[in-house]
Amino acid sequence: MSSPVSHSGFPVGRKGRRAPFGLPRRDSLVERCLAGITWNKGMQARGRKVTALDEIGWPERIHWWIDAVGGFLTFTKTELRVGNLGCSDNDIAIMGGLAEHHADIKRDESGVVLTAHAPTSVNGEKGESFLLHDGDEITMEGVRLKYRQPMPWSTTARLEIESHHRLPLGLDAVLLLGDLCLLADHPDAHIRTHWPASVFIRREHDRYWVQSETPLVIDGVSHDRAGPLTPRSHVEADWGSFSFESVDETGR
Image (tube, rainbow, N blue to C red; front, side):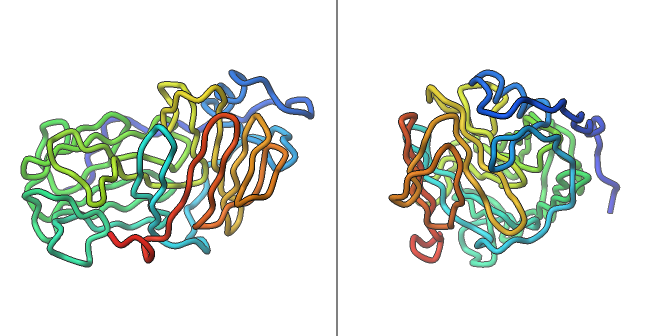
């Protein structure tokens, strides 16, 4: 098998300077997330470090429905199987001409590697193994995907279907949920919204937290800008809302 195709190296996020206590202004939150800085539960700034992905106590696959944005087939696990709808072993099953087991996607602290088991090309170059980078265009038997990883220091990435093929249940894209996910009206957000505020999901130990610039309600309980999430949480605030659903409840 050929070695991974590398287009460029992954830059390491730089350490951020310590910010004053209190909530940063809106554009500062986006800028600091892009620079590799996030906040702990007390909204105190800290630098992000690229760390190994660990399996956590969440389901490996959930559906994430975001108000006025769309639905995302969301994975917390680090190894995914890609293929057609006819095989129940496939994590990413696409309605199209894919082989039963077309490819595997594996991610760790060094990057995301796509290993092909059927004809596949990235940016027009055929091969068996590819180290993916933001903006790469993947073609598998007529199924065209775009890989987005707007923050190289973050392990979160998105796969968008650019051909006419579709995911089950009307889901819009695949999200590989890592250590942090920024939702903002910004072209380099992991998920682009038109909300008046920026929101991010971050992982700490074995659970995820949501942090917002304004108060929010999680599963009917009010929180001052931050709170823990479960795989069935519903979150709402003045900027909008989103919900998680277990795949066991909704099917593929």
